[in-house]
Amino acid sequence: MKDGRSVLVERGDTHKRVLTSFLNGTTKPHLGSILENMYDSSSRVDFRAKDRTTNPGMNMFNETHPLNEIEHGQAAMVTWAVRLVDLVSAEAEEMTKQETGLHLRARAKAGGREEYDKASWDAIRAFRLSGLEDIAHKHAPIMTYLVKAYTQAGFAEAGHKNETARVVAIRKYRPQNLVVINTMMVMTNGRWIKANIYQMCRGIWLFASQAPASMYRVESRLGLCVSYKTVYDALREMGRGKRNVLRAAVQAGTHYIVVSDNIQAYARQRERRIGKENKMLTGLAATAVKMEDCDSQAFDLKLLIERQARQERRALTTEILLDSLDLTHLENCTVVQFLQVLISFVPELSIYKKNLEEYAKILDRKPIPQSRLTETTPLSTNSANEMTVQGLREGILDFATTQMGIDEETLGNTASIWSGDGKTFNMLLLLKRMTAQEASDFHSFRWLIPLLELWHSKWTDLSRVVRTHWGTTDDPGSLATIAAIGECPKPSDMRKVDFFDGAHLINLALDAQLLNCWELSDGSMAELTPNMEHTVARH
Image (cartoon, rainbow, N blue to C red; front, side):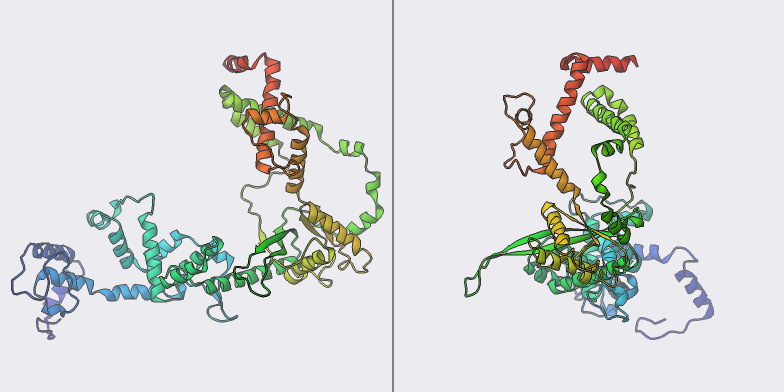
């Protein structure tokens, strides 16, 4: 222990025991209550006129004088408390450690100590602001408390009364807890640039939002995100990692369906110079979708080729198709559809809505689990032109061989499904026809099974229904009349009807026709609801 002149003073054993009991809280009053009373009492004492160590006012902190030279008690206590910055500095060192989980590297050497922190889609999906808040509370409780006390009015006062009873109102817009987390992460990144998981995820969000490059330059200077190059490098490495996982899964026997379509972008030249012209950039994009709950024998290539050679489809007739239909199940589904319209129209029948939903679930032959999350892998785009057979072949080989690892050696006895819209489907069929003379199964694309996407078939059928039944407003049963009554827009192109507008119109027409059926069987529309009310009351 030191005296007022900073000279070590030797104490006796009795004094040591009494002082130890006082400092470790064995005796009362505790040191905290004494400090609080000292500070409260010193705040009521006026400053001496000759005191030059502190400027009287709200700010009692003195950053120039040594602590033993500060005269007023309140200023000395405030300065002593603030100068315990070593504790905050130690928290900052703890926050910037690799084990804290705030490191996310765009590039890392294989086998290096930073490889564990390499950016990946799993790390991005696991990112949560609530997780960062837990890290800040665990490793930097003092700094988190100070920032919260600064941003949330009444936070410190509520905690002084009762820590468990601290309730602070959080704003709906710009909530204080998010401001605190943002501040903590920016300060941590300012301390050590590698503690950047918040900045990395924010940069990826800006990239997905198509933010201009100038925004990266400004926000990276402010510590809010990483630079554009870092984001680009991270996305490139994450893409490579995802591609390696996809190749390993394909080699392990996992089946994927590849959905592809052409892409177009118009490149407009802003500066007119020699050789610079506006042009349309075309290419091919694809996504690999993991197939689940499927029979692996359905992808047996040899069995597929053998069945195709038999040409058993020649014996397919309409009677065979009709016999394969479960008419009882179809009738039950039709009943559900009829009742859904009636229950939605008549409020008194809403009590049966839950029963109808349970009955509809019973009719599900193979429902998709509610917890299922379809795994998709976007493939890198290329400059192939699917409008030509040669271009489509180059694009498929890039997707299959370069990115998925499917070649003549690794193909084995596995077929693969490739789907797209009507044009893509036709070009796939033409490609198989043009390469049918190739000897190997790979180069002849016998392993490729073309599939017309169901959404495209549904859109085509939707356009056909609208085009066929549009009619005129003179016909009360036409879609044109229902569209006029329901104030639905007329399709600008009958061959390519807007999907959502067309689906809404058809569903509206179906509901109207079904209610008309109930009207004809129950009297009139004006009597439909009262009759249903009487039926519900009777039962």
